[in-house]
Structure formats: structure tokens, C-alpha cells
Length: 202
Image 1 (tube, rainbow, N blue to C red):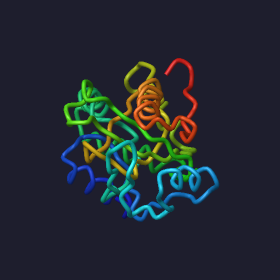
Image 2 (image 1 turned 180 degrees about the horizontal axis):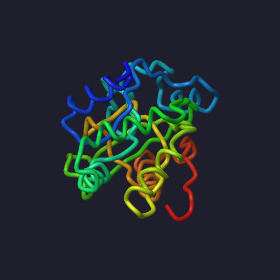
Image 3 (image 1 turned 90 degrees about the horizontal axis):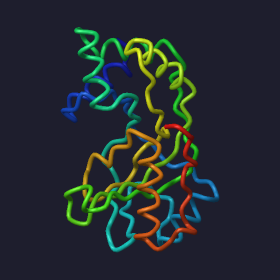
Image 4 (image 1 turned 30 degrees about the horizontal axis):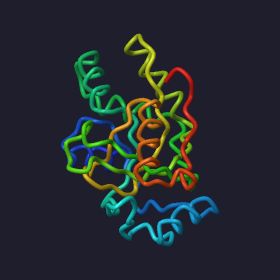
């Protein structure tokens, strides 16, 4: 197993989650014009390791960063189909393709309302869109194994959170759009949002 493979296995054990995650130590926002403008509208700079006050809450920087390639439910389904070491199977297929994870600097604030998440004021996440050239081929392999089509939520890295330290969880694009809209309404700053455009049918 490669060094990156060991990190994947270690992170999955630390989070006590069967989700298949790619750890991204030292992740930093790309400092583009949109990122700078959004953060400055909240009164902060581009330093990623600082709390961000917005909408009456304080977003705290995450202690670790990762890309989720297969969530808990999907890994559990694969485990039933494979009846073996599902993480080793996933790791082999990920490593066989294009493993680049490219930052974009495109930030979106997400909010899951209290009635959808029992965390006081709800859950909040600040995420950065990423480009993952190998993700489509990786997902097609999972579809082939399971014999069904899988959703394709926007690839992202969560950098700041409030209410739930692991983030919100985004299994489908329509949830991303819903949570981005809820955040814009709660923050009353729709003009400062830079949401990822949803793809039809996901």
C-alpha cells in the first residue's frame, strides 16, 4: 500500500466511519478574486486557520481536510456486494486512475436548518469546490459493481464548520443547492455566495 493509501486507511479509522476518504493534509484555499471578496465581506482575510464569523455563528477551521469519494451508505452497500475488504478494493481502483485533486478557490457556505439537523442552530459548512479528473471513471467502476447509477454530488473539501465537526454530508447535488440557498437566506448575503451550479438529474 502506498503512503497515501496508509493515510486513507488511518483517516477512516480515526473518524470511525466506513466512508472512503482521501486525506488532504495542509489544504489551503486558492486565493482568487472571488474567494478574497467573499471572505472580506465577512470581515476576514484568506487565512484558512482562523474562525469566520457569519450569520451570527462562528465557523471554526477543521482540524483535517479530505475529499469523500464514497459515503457511509455507499461503502456499506459495496461491502455487502463484495464480502471482502471494501476499503482495499476502493483504494486499488482509486490509485489505478488519475488521483489529482485540484483546488478552484470557489467557496460556498452551506446550512442545514435545525429541523433537519439536531445541532442547536443547525449545521454549517464552508466548502471549496475541487476538480477531480479521475472521479468519473472511479464512480463508473462502482456503478458497474453495483449494477445501478450513482448520484454525482459536487466534489468539494470542507474547510470550516459549525454545529457538526465532520461537516454536513452531501450525497446529492440537490442537497448542495438546498443548503447553499438556506445559508444565503440565513446570512442575508446572497450576493456574496458563489454556489456551484447543480447538474440536472443528480
